[in-house]
Length: 122
Image 1 (tube, rainbow, N blue to C red):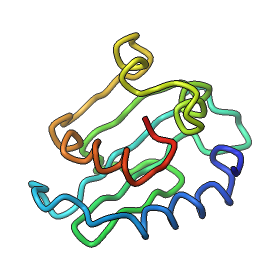
Image 2: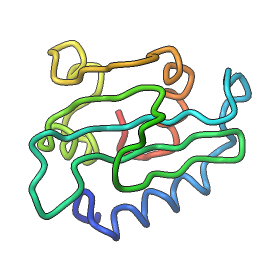
Image 3: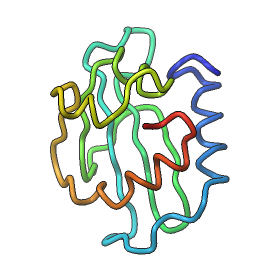
């Protein structure tokens, strides 16, 4: 498995997303943008990533997007642990390790899909 947020990690995740089952048809808008922020990210890497999700597919890119529907705040260590499957998102959310701003309803229909699309997502 590639190092979290490395170029190879982005490539592998985007390949996984490109080959995932179709996006749920019940999206309320043409594209959902979800930014995941890592306030404590190392200075030599991205401080955020943006998931772009539409009926045509999904991808993740480095950086944030001003038109995000929702912004998820999580520590760099917790995000890395989620990606590797060392912790699960439900526990992290319950424990207050994940904070969401914006339209949570924009991402709720996508959570199950993202969990199936990414083999280590919990």
